[in-house]
Image (cartoon, one colour):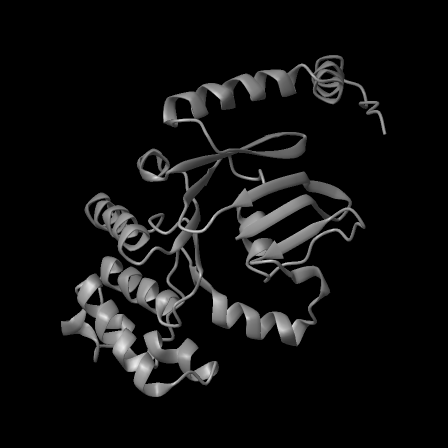
Length: 266
């Protein structure tokens, strides 16, 4: 479904993602976990085509065999609206629109068939149990209700993949638990591929793959596709220790202790 090869990203000459490769298959539920600053959200935005990456002849980004590196900005916008659903931590609902109008907004922008969109709306509102709030505006919704509306909006165009960035980060534990179960249901019942960024260990547990991000000065990202949760966290610890023993990390620590400027190798 999505194949990423040799992907890197820098901000102001600071390497954020370094030579990442990953193969995401249809129907998988993948979590990306790691410390702040490791590049998790940046990676999600890049595969969602809303952020750029460092141009490199060895880099490839394929979505259902479509080479996204060769599409123009306008073509990427059309592709994104048809194939990718986004869920953010802070909902991003338009306050002047009702819940129903917020959900249907991507369909209207993409000029999707109105009858099909309304049928999809009915199906999603039943799955998400939000039939009774469709006419309410966001200010009258709870945090959990807003997130359910955001999930419906992300799914209204029947995307191939759902990208979620800390979807429960702004919710209380009760509503977070409901969203956890909801994502599992969506993945199973609708066969939607899900990639999410999270600090929540429960999400990592219910995902059928675990992607691990670690960072030591230069950010590194490694995807672990065949490990269970315990093995994935053991692997993370191992990689972090190995990273600390690398030359750049040792030089950085040594320079700090000796109160001198580090001399990193190019």
